Image (tube, rainbow, N blue to C red; front, side, top):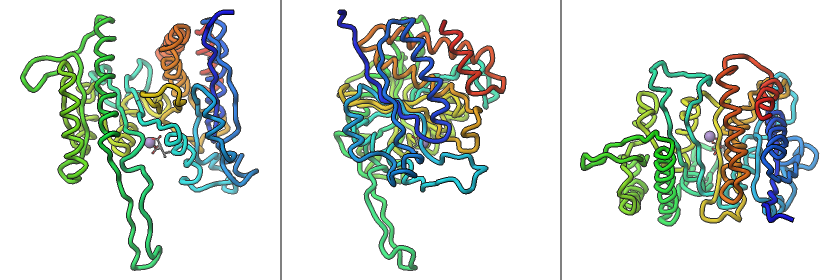
Length: 385
Ligand code: IPM
Ligand code: MN
């Protein structure tokens, strides 16, 4: 027998359009297994989901994180309102309850980096009229383990006029160092790939010289001083180890503005959990909208902790169950999973390229059409051969 890597993937279709787009991702994986010599064992679970909650009174079985720990990676469709919104009597949880597993999985496997690439493909919707929008190529890296998402705080005298609410943000030096170092490593990697492809980019450094890559730090240090100062200091320290990478700083409000006026000027952007959350919805629009925006949550320091690959979009209850959802974001997210696998398995690298090429060719040819979920899946599958 060969010593070929046997991958084990947990498939969590989730709620709303999740199962519909996941079905297309699974078809693509089946085809790629055959054509690329890839071996992926998939185990599908009907949790976390509203449907599971309706039957069992909880979104996922007790100990579900232990079950997921036995996999190499997690592929998730979407969580949230299951829809369809035309059915006002549907079983509905609060957002906080239905989305909790997402945060539990990120936390449980210490998936401290969330990567959301923004590189619009020809054929994807384009919301900016400036033709330079075609050149956008950035990677937004979101700190995914702490900051504004630690869930610390509470409500005192809730609902009364004396109510006091706290929602504390926590920033650690260790958490900050690791995400910034990851951002610089990704900037180096992107510069290398561009050089190899004969498409280098150039960014101005503070001393006036040119650099092949850039990391932009986002803060709100003019108002949120303590966190802003620590971020700024740690960023400078880490940047000193990567003199060939240009650095830049934006306040988050200005970053929002510049994502609209000149997004092509960014390369790698690194931001706190909440700032990253907000900026990546904006980046998703620059990428062509939620229908085409992939995402992943990973622990770059420990590949044994399963990463979770999930599109940036949610459960889209307005179109759920109608075979209307575009599976492109889910397919590109699956390609990100294959990229992650490629570090240990060249067949996965081949599969990632094929899938991305097929999705890109499909978008270029038919991106403007209104199609059913299955039609888009069929078209991509036909290109996978
Ligand atoms: C995302 C989502 C989640 C987040 C929600 C659903 C909790 O918006 O993945 O960006 O805020 O992280
Ligand atoms: Mn979000």
